[in-house]
Image 1 (cartoon, rainbow, N blue to C red):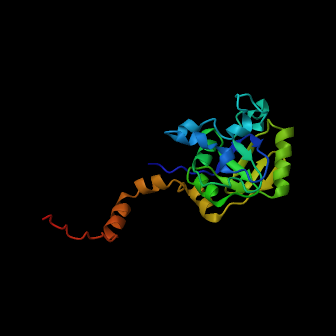
Image 2: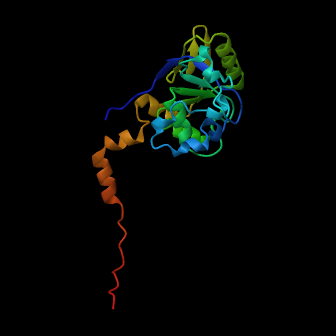
Image 3: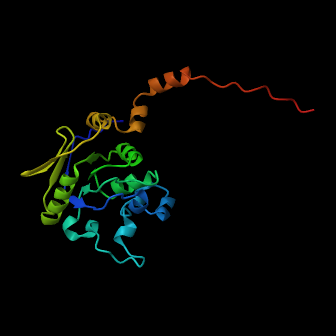
Length: 207
């Protein structure tokens, strides 16, 4: 299988404001009964976006000017709460290709990196600036550059941060653990052969 490098992501940005955006809010528990992650498309932030009768609450994700946005601008401690991997899956399956926030919960960050959803951090001041720009200039396209570690659009540019290991994995196309295993069958067999195999006690004969 071919490696997929992720170096730049270009698209419109959409603000999803608020600190401590937990995974229960990102994808409500009732949607975890899905058979495949594809069924989570369009379900991200469902209760934030819709009332019980299905009418919209006017969430930025549903605003016409933000239609087709590719990059979420979040707040502090994004993805906290339970460790459900459905949360980044719901975001990715709904067309979002990157998340920029002040900080991320560790498990959410790792789950996102494993499905090719880069999560990068920016300062609180830059997050506020980006959210204001998204409101004033929603049609603008932004580019997240994982080599330069910037998010930029025209004259506007902010610095972003990401730990070195996941950044290198994106740039080298080594973020997908399944692809890594499938492309190295010999190493998998060698490791399996080197592992100790537990011995079972002899079976007792029935009398």
